Image (cartoon, each protein chain N blue to C red):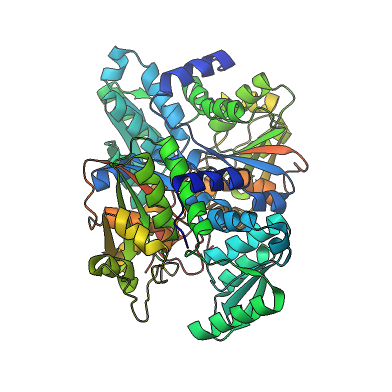
Length: 316
Length: 316
């Protein structure tokens, strides 16, 4: 598959902008003081469906031909992408089939159902999920929308950076979380095209550090049994996203679960916003000092806000 | 003391706008569905110091003559007003003396100290607080800045509604919490002057329902031993604020602590923002159905976001 260009991302923005939120960019004097930089937070936790995933999913859904669309869409991701795809499908009036392991949290299932997604349960193994998704596609003719390794999805995710740099054109660096790399690669394409000198940086959970490993090795290096409180970032960096990241991203820092929890708590206590652990990993990398960004104007994408309050993820 | 006019409030806005945040107005399709109205949330929880109180305190501090200012300011309120006054005094480079009961929470003391306020401890009775404040004023010549019963403070609080109606000129109703009535009276003056047909409504905790009692009685009716999870709304409606509220406010609904907690949780879970119990009382009155606002465009002021996370006030 081909890499999305800035132009392709601009087209995605024109396609989705009437349906998504132009999320605010917030600042905090106290967090600036804590981190030693001027920080600008692009609040995708305030996005429709509670995460940037709405952008990519909607761009993919709106890119389908009428004939394709009629058969619906499908995915076997169980997190924010699944809810976003269900939401996007609902906007176009088509079905979304979401394959989820039967062990998925009721919190995540509820999000998919809220937007009218059809949940297809399967055994909690990677193989069972892929097989179930193949079966759904074979039976329904639905279009599979990958959570990150799809140029339409990457382009949609890149629209957050488009808005961010429109609002704050003079950022010296932009930081986001990385899981499969959809947000990071889309951000990198936009940021480096609009502002070639900008530093593109990312944070990644220690327990799922395949992206930073891959960046060091120069080739994709999955890790076995990834685990982190940032449960949205456990995916392996993609085939489409990795070459973009390798070319455009300066550094990926890993952060511990405790650092992620501290970041979630700080954002809630000081910025007064709910950011889920996965969404706070970019900020955690800055606050912990694992990314060196001092004395610069740093843009941080807070990528999602879907916190299960019964679990209080800042409490550890 | 005279009532602030719209013009006086516009002057206050010109005085403070360079230092405060123009807080965003957020919306939520899900909360609209839950409440049966189109809701617009003015997010003063995202204001400097975490509450609208920054507006009134700063207007009061910046209204002092140089001679007055040199002697500092004082207050015997221990909540968000105290932190806001310390912050405002810091901006002008003057001292703020804050009389607090020795039983005040470390969370509240920390906020005052963070902004450089001088804490003067006293016994936890109303009388001891007033005496301590009088002593501070006598010794230092500091200007007492009342948390609500002061036209400069009311005018500052009214600037939130000024911004709100600039951003959303066609609101049918505006709702906010009421404690001493500074925010409500400032909001009422602005809203009814700019949009005479607008309904001005408020929510109040059941356990501190003096404002609604006073409205029914046509005269101020303090309640004994007010108590609520909304600890910022325990004050008795003021001498300056009450006549304004009596003239301009259509209804004040009381809400239970459980309804307030539910509102805090909903705002955190769905809107992804931290609103403290006191700040969520206007929304609680709408969500609970205690204020009838259906089928209208309803502006809700979320007045503060200083949550002590160790207490998790949505958990009850």
